[in-house]
Image (cartoon, rainbow, N blue to C red; front, top):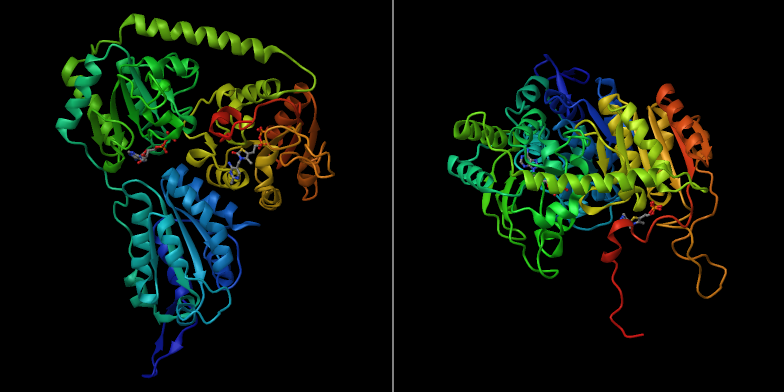
Length: 586
Ligand code: ADP
Ligand code: TZD
């Protein structure tokens, strides 16, 4: 229990007192939270010092958005809310993008921001960094709380933790006004006011009728398919999920951050036959994956519909902890609402009691049709990867990354960009759960260095960040953070001189370059060297391989500038079709 200097009470007795600073720290520690990602300043500078003095890991960033992204992904990796700490108004707003992104992605985090004097803020009298932060945060996160009195800190932290991790995880905002930190109270009473949250993410057991409905559908399927989403990765029910897939023999498709839940090389993976299985499957079981844009909203031609809005003929089973997710895009025939661990073990039990160990595998012609497409596509990919063009392109560079991850399956892969994202996802196999961290539901740029810092801090494993040159720019200054904490992060920048590509020209012939073009031939590696890390400039797969191997071996913060053909890739990567085009006739 942290206490401040003893004070002499009126009675003359020496009274141990504590304060707001220490109560917050004690409440976090009591709940097993040992790391804070943040950026100091009024009114939380002393808080960061005291947290460090109290044995917490305090990781300081150069911009709050990166600290927020770090907190969010730490939450995803650990199922404990990641903590981001910021100053008032502008610092809070910088952190807010990450909080909103965490909420959209169902990552548990708590953004704790100091705030200015309530009376002045509420009368809008112009305080230092004045802003009604609570009101602004509310619509962008799962829950938002403010604590005004030291004796309420325990409840405030408990509520924030529960809101972040129970049910569908998400972002929580906790507003701590400057005055709160300085408040004092009796240390013993303070200690008693803290709450160690019991069972913060209670199991949610699915109903037996819901389980039966799902099993019946699966049993009758001729062309079943399982789609694993990042909810399945988050749930840490890895063994049961694998068991379910292997015992039923149903082909599965991993969404981006579910890659590696089973090794991507698993024979039941249908990833290399994605468009075929989505259009053809007759029963699809979604496990912690939403039918949002990333799955074409469960309808249209992707799903065998006759036009872009038409529903296909398949039936859906959906496992999700959020009852409101069901039917959000198309009819869900068998909703299975509960936590994935409980749902999957209930399915396994039902399968056992239904069929003993002899659950009938899916019809052979379905599996054969998938295998044929897979083989064809994998052979085509192998051919492309074997090429060694000059200049290097995404494929020849990623062929190297693919080997490095294969040799280091515990390494964590962080990935952002457009082409750099899509090609990495499809080329680089993952072998273990929660090793691939990327732009997620929003396709947001800027997660790169925040995710990398947190991944290294939380896991102690080497991190490889595959970054488009544009993507990297959103958080690039954090290479200093990588160096400051000496983190085993190898950043690889696929440098093609611009957003998507570097080939656009200004149609007016004026002196400004086109909006998507950057300084040509930039040496990002020098940025890392400026802070004492290792920089490498590579133009061939052999050079890239050597530099990456050395980075993994040395565990030194490393930035590899991998020069890619500036004409390689496409506009917006795989989602070119989402770019609006004018309806105006030319
Ligand atoms: P992806 O982008 O990989 O398709 P989404 O983020 O769209 O995945 O979906 C994740 C889903 O997982 C969300 O609907 C969320 O409610 C759900 N989810 C998250 N954690 C759990 C859990 N422990 N149990 C059940 N569902 C969960
Ligand atoms: N801003 C934010 C916060 N998120 C975004 N997704 C974008 C802008 C738009 N955008 C993309 O969707 S991808 C991308 C931007 C700017 C960068 C693509 O260029 P890159 O990758 O250099 O990172 P490739 O490999 O050259 O395509």
